[in-house]
Image (cartoon, rainbow, N blue to C red; front, side, top):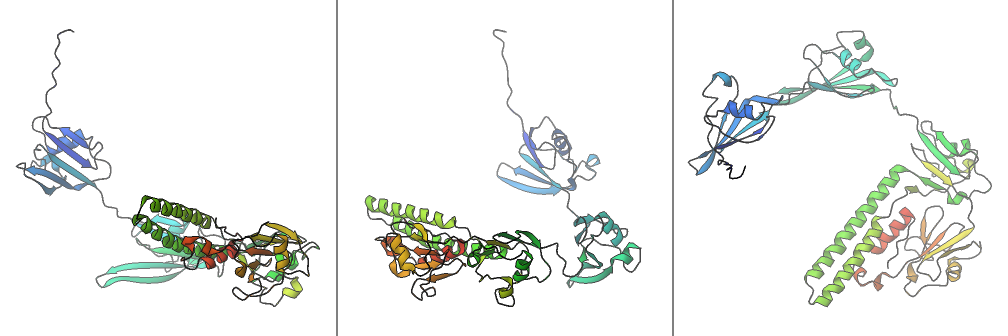
Length: 443
């Protein structure tokens, strides 16, 4: 109503509570408020609150803050523990301590993991049942590892368990388990799921083939019926995941090292530029470096292993008849009857393969070397996955060109000012080209 007056009194003394209560906050104290009252205002203790400790912060004489400890055990009947709160008090409550009474079950069981044990009750047979039982490839032996705490340090004991006897309740094998034990159900020796290799392209029966232990390349090629008449055997691509991972790791490490070298030098130059124009030029150079590095970071290894592929009968008992691994892949392309020329030439393209011609013939078909071409370091990515320098001995030697080969004409590094003093950049670009089949252009 008109002329009504609303009076909001000033706030009174305050106390806070944090930690394991349902509503941690700062609350106003009304009259004589004790610790138990504050806990009640905060909704009470959470289910995992530890009653053995409460920490109090209190401001003394408005000069400093001090700490003291207490507990909540029998607080309802203890006036000393359920003390009167003061303005500025802060109570902190804590959670109970985790004391896991669990063991770890690994190996040939349906559900490996952690399982709770009751001291003096839980045995090997019980835990195996909780883990869904042993798998079909489990051996008849398990290994129990137990760590015992002593004053001299931990002692580790190993016990061999007969799983079948434990299942029958044999006391010697169906032993009682203790917290922190590890029970390993062994698989049968050298167990692994069915391993496969994939054959594609110009083989008579492409598909995914299961591998026998120790099976070699010639055996799988024979099972696939050999090559078709259209097969370009020399260009067969053999890839392996472990090799891809290793190649990618090497590429990433090289690029990371190069990035540190390029960007640290560039940032130092920007900081010491003598004029705004110099700073702008250095900044443009830095952007070029970042663009170049982004190209390098996008290079993805293929995991190719360079092999001299051949018919199974000719491949057998040679160094290239390698043992196959899970996930290996072989792709046999059809014969392209072309040679590619890429890099610093006037017309990057593929040209019809002519058996009697050398690499210079194909560079001529591509219009010849561009002005910025590094004519002394032309190399050939051969169809079989190897690389040789054209007519020299820097990466190998040889002028011979075959169907499916790629002639790479690199650019001169010294035409880009900041690359002249960059260590190993030519080698890095070459290794990336071999591992990925991608030639990184400069600018």
